[in-house]
Length: 301
Length: 249
Image 1 (cartoon, helix red, strand yellow):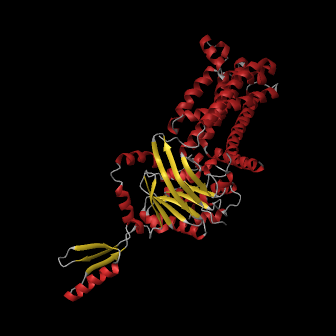
Image 2 (cartoon, each protein chain N blue to C red; image 1 turned 30 degrees about the vertical axis):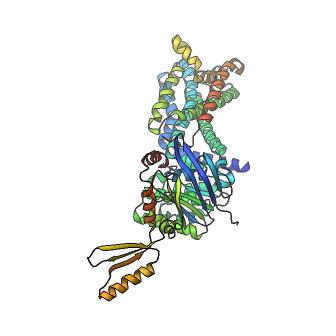
C-alpha cells in the first residue's frame, strides 16, 4: 500500500445551472480512515459524494479517488469501490441471496456471499424476495450489495437516515467492523452523534464549503479552544465562564469557596462538543438565507 | 472482452429468471398476443382469407409487445426505482447490461414467433413458413426497430405511473391502424396512408410474405427500408436520451 490519500478533493466546484451546490470544497481522506461529511440538508454533501462515485461531473477542481479520476469512470475504480446511495431500489423479484450472488459475480475478488449476509445481519431474510423486506432490511441489503465486492473504499450516503435507534446501532457496528477490516469509509450524515461515534475525522460542510475539518474531539480547537467551566454561584444562578486555562480558574473558584466555607454546587468543566462547534459554525452563516434556500433543492437528493 | 461477454450472459440469465417471476409482466408482454390470436382465430374460424391475415398480424404485434412495450415499461420502472443507478455503480459494463436486455427481448420475441407459427400450423390452416430465412430477416429487423423505439419512448415517459398510458396510447392505435386485425388494403384511404408510414405495417407485410404468401424477399425490400429508417431514428433517440437515473427537478 502507499501513503497517497484514498480521496483527494481540491477546490471542488459544482453548479447546476445558476445554482452552485459545491463552492470550493477541500478535504483529504487517508487510507483506512472513516471520514464524515457533516452538514445540514442542502449543504452539498450528496453532490460531492456523487461526484466522487462517478455519477456527476464536476464543474471545476481536482478530484482523485484511489489515485484515479472518477469523472472518467474507469472500470478499475468501480471494482474497488462500494456504494450505498441515499435511496435506491433493487430488483424486486430476486431473493436476498440471489441478488448478492449476482452482485458478487460482477467483481473480480468478491467476499463470500454468506459472510456478507451475516455481516449485514440478513441471515433470516436470505431466502426472501427483496420486495418483502422492510425499509430497514432493504437498507441492510444496500450495505450487503455494496460490500459483497470486497471494496477498499466504501461510500455511505446518509446510511442511517430514518432508522430506529436499534437499527442505527447495528449500522454503526457494521461501519466499525469495516474500519476494523482496514477499509476506507466516506460517509455523509446530518447526525452529530453519528459523526462523533464513527468518524476519525469530519468536515463540517455548509453551502458547499468546508467550515472546519478535523477529528471530532479536536474540532473545537480552532474555533473555540476554551474550556467551559460552570458552577452555581452564591445567588443560586448558574454561572459559566470560558477559559484557555481551567486550572487557574478552578484554583481561584475552589479556594474562594473553601475560604467562605461553602461548596461549589454543580461544578463542571467541559470541552466544546462537536454539537457546539457545529452550531457555532453554522449559525455564523444563518443570515445567508438566499443561498440556504437555493441549496435546499439541489443537495437534498 | 471475455469478461464483458460472461457478464452479459449472467445478466441475461438474471433477466430471464426475473421475467418469469413477475406474472403481470409476463402476461402483458407474452400472453396477451396469444390471447388475441385465440380470440380472433375463433372469430374468423372458417374464413381462411381472414386467418391468413390475422396470424402474421399477431406475429407482428408480438414483436412489438415483446420489445417496444416491454422495454418502455421496464426501463422506466428500473430508472424510477433507482436500479439502473445502482447498477451503474458496479463494474458491470454498460454494453454488457444493454446487450443482456436486448438478448432478453430477442428471446421473448423468438419464443413468441415460434408459438404463433406453431398455432398457425396446428389450428388455423396455415402451413409452416414457406420462407424461414425471410421470416428471420423481418423478425430481426422488427426487434431492432421496436426495441430501440421502446427505449427511446422510455426517455419521454415522466414516471412509471404514467408509463402504461404512454405505451398503450401508442401501441394500441398502431396495432389497429397497421392492419394486425384486418387487411390494411381494405381500410379507408386516410388510414391506409397513415399505416404506410408506420413500421408495424411493413413488418406485418414482410411476415405475411414469409409465413403465408411466399412472396420473395426481393419483393419486400421497400418494407425493410421503412423499418430500417424507423430503426435508425429509434437507435439515435435511444442512445441520445439514455439516462441512468431520474433527472433532477
